Image (cartoon, helix red, strand yellow):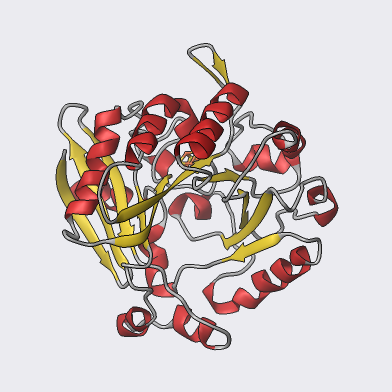
Amino acid sequence: MKLVHTQNLPSGNIYVLYDEQKDAYIECTSMQDVTVEGKSHTEVRESLDPNVIQKHLKPIEEKWLMTVSTQYGCAYKCMFCQVPSIPFKGNLSEEAIMKQVIFLLSQKPGIKTLKAKIGFARMGEPTLNYKNVLNVIEKLKYLKDGIRFLPCFNSILPKINVEGKYIYEIMDEVLRVKEEVHNGFLHFQISCNSTNEEERKYLFGGANVLTLEEINNYFKDKKITNRTITLNFIMGDGWELNYDKLKIFDPSKFTIKLIPLNQTDRGKQNGLKTYANYSNLEKLERKGYELKQLGFNVVTDAVAKCEEAGLCCGQLIHIYLNNLK
Ligand code: SF4
């Protein structure tokens, strides 16, 4: 695995690695959280001055945000995502996933941190490669002294069967690792993006995913400790967010996350627009406030304007490969 390109952003780095054996590219990222309170939120997020962002970075010793890829490209073609523009070349091995983790740690030698949040969420749908992904997540528990990992398993929950295991059995495995290996400190995040099932299917590029009702039914009798299950909604303009349909979920088990639709070439080609972004984040926060009235814990977040161009999955490889042509 060879580093071929890096993009430096005010809050961190995006790396393109080349796997010679596969003749394929993957991305991984290392970032810091931008924390801004109250009114200055928009001002900071909209600033094009990197120093303004850097002044608001949470110390990496408190929180380190990383993502790694689980597939070379992706088997799915979500309408908002840039990854499908990169040729799909299958699953990463356990070793290749772990190499990205080691690579990211090696970029900041000697750092100790209370929370190293690591998303198996850059390129690829992790349920399709669940054994390798979960093996790496299990090993994080003992990987490095002074670093407490919070693994994040992010999925669209496709109705798949991998070597005889149906999606529900794969979810059982994720929950086993969450509860038994990481004592509940695993972040299981489910891509929802709309409360309308037809719209969801369209946004997921026609993928046959578990419906919100099926997701809720699955979790009904499951024991969830420490980290709740996150229902992630990318907020596109006109995409349905019907509070009544969300009332089926138990707020003690589920958190709702609202984030803007970040700009990608594919999103633009598919005519998708965001509902809000860094400049009018209060629109998202208002929705968040309304959902809180239903008892949910709600998280809203947006990337800063000067980071939007590079932060989406697959964007940097897309630009890199275009420049090579
Ligand atoms: S959003 Fe995830 S599942 Fe969908 S195409 Fe992108 S990487 Fe694949």
